[in-house]
Image (cartoon, rainbow, N blue to C red; front, side):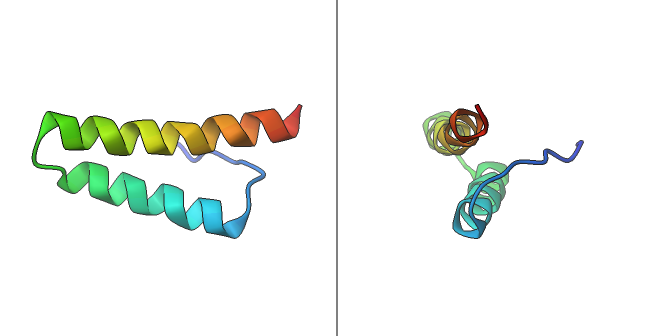
Length: 51
C-alpha cells in the first residue's frame, strides 16, 4: 500500500487510520462499506482544502 500524503489535521489522520483498522476487522459488507465511506469523506475534505 502506498503512502498518501495529505494536508489534514492530526485528528483527521488518526481518525483515518482508525477507520482503516476497523475496515480490516469488519465482519460484514455493510460494516466495511460504512468505514470505507467515512475514510473517503476525510480524503475528500483534504482535497477541497488543498485547492
